[in-house]
Image (cartoon, rainbow over all chains, first blue to last red):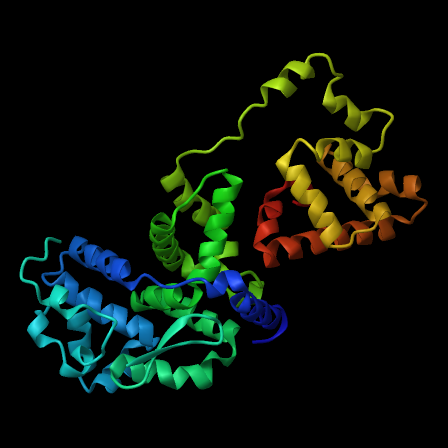
Length: 114
Length: 251
């Protein structure tokens, strides 16, 4: 990035080294609930599946094609997962193998309430 | 998947697994340039990629939270950690909705550029905000000359402005910005005089102001533009001074 945006990058990096930025810890538990609420509001039959997959791709920072390749699934299948159109049983094992980020028992729970 | 503290202090996912493999690949190289990274995230938001909201929250939640806290302080409100997390999510979703209009070339961080939307989200939590009346000052005001008279009286614009600084938050902020931007005393005076003439409807403010400063008109215009640009640059780069961008003085 050049010009003002280059200065912006340097400033952003400096800010993130600042102690106030270091104190930030993402609250993924609440974020996934919020994502599920949004998916539910859109009418997704399995909103928690949508939320879990979106969260994992968001943490990875991948776009959809890159994440689909990483998972070894076709992009349309990933799209269905992210739109909450398939049940939790359809979540690829490689996603379930990611520890610590998603409470899969919550995703698998039958009564979603969204 | 292990977690470790990134250079910027964010907890990052790394190691095995699908999501982890993605994060691990970036930590070493793509994350070298945070400005590029932010531009990529914003572009993905503009394309409607909802996962990018998570990326924005994960990577830039800290500075966004700082911007939220700053607005709350301006409102003299207090936001606890639970509320803060919720507000930061909402700000990320708000930024997603306007991401298409943001450009990294503008030089402003998205949450500074969209500060009004940030403020709206904060206001939804804190409620509408108004600066409380100071009863003592209100009572004393009746015994004092009209402050507006100072702007057209014997004193200079700068001295009139200085009299507002202790009592008016926006004047305090502008005063700090003038110091921070290292605007000289002469250029401060010129800035106020020029802006006053301009906003009074004078179509040639430089022609009116130039003789007062013993300057040529072109030099007055240049000095005004230089001071204004420095202040607007400060407003774009430092969130603390972001409200200055809305001041009519700098319009």
